[in-house]
Image 1 (tube, one colour):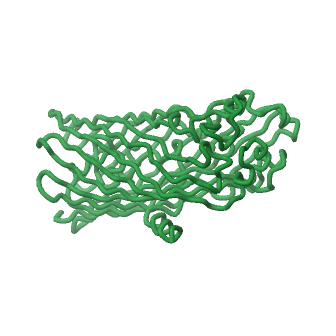
Image 2: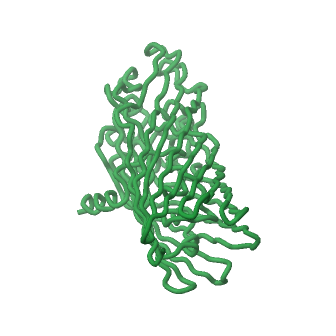
Length: 415
């Protein structure tokens, strides 16, 4: 029964997800993605509610549905390792990830607006030629982590120029790991370590947000999403800290949107992701040296740093029914050079996005939007990353990606 419910949740929001910044995509919704991912103080469609639920108060009655297509090209290199020659490994088993999007927003009164939106998060690798095979792993290996779900939103205007928003985010998260047998000896529970198939659990979080019109064309917004608490993954209790705990990190940030002219708006956002507060992501592998095996209480994880992302987006309306967008985002890198060997499973080294997008308004309140984003290759070189017991040397990890998508929107009561 649990698996049937989980399948329905996942199908409603995503057929898979691949991150471009850590666990998450660079923005929420096709329009936001075309403008660099901004969304704390500026909203054009319902999917932006995932960033700041208060922006529901900025929208009219509308329905949005779209498809985002992400292509990732991750991999790694092993250099100076006594267990085998220098080699490059590409995560080439699955590279393409279609991610459906959808949102609905409806004002109930002049002060109250409600809505619902889908969300997805994830990361992973799929090596047809496993980099860990030289150490005793299976010929094929990798990791898949996906979360999908829905958010219920309510926004309230205590003042005509200010709105508060709240959302309850419910989802299902699934993990699968293959081919990491060489590290089983470092676990307190080797029987729950690798090749266990898919294991999943339900989870939830809450988001609070605010958006305000300060006058003179300037708007400000901020939001905080709590840590996502998720059921323990018993099948991988020997890999994940605290016997299978894999919560998702809290996210917070804010932004400004300034309308230079009636046709030009520029937005800037800053977003912070608290990976260091979640043991599975933030704890370094050096916990092994402290006598804490994999899977133990507060045991080793990926060793990621917190991530801060800076975004800027421009929205320009050159004609009455045409809107053009462009944007740029840049983030800090979360992978530490000393932890790159484990990060071959999750090459979250993305750093910069350049984006463009458009919306063409149609008759009857319909509109058609699209975007394209490019993330150039970024590589993190290992430093003392492969232990002497495995032959020493270094593991480097890299990723680049590109993505694009389209959506249809319907403004009820529109022209």
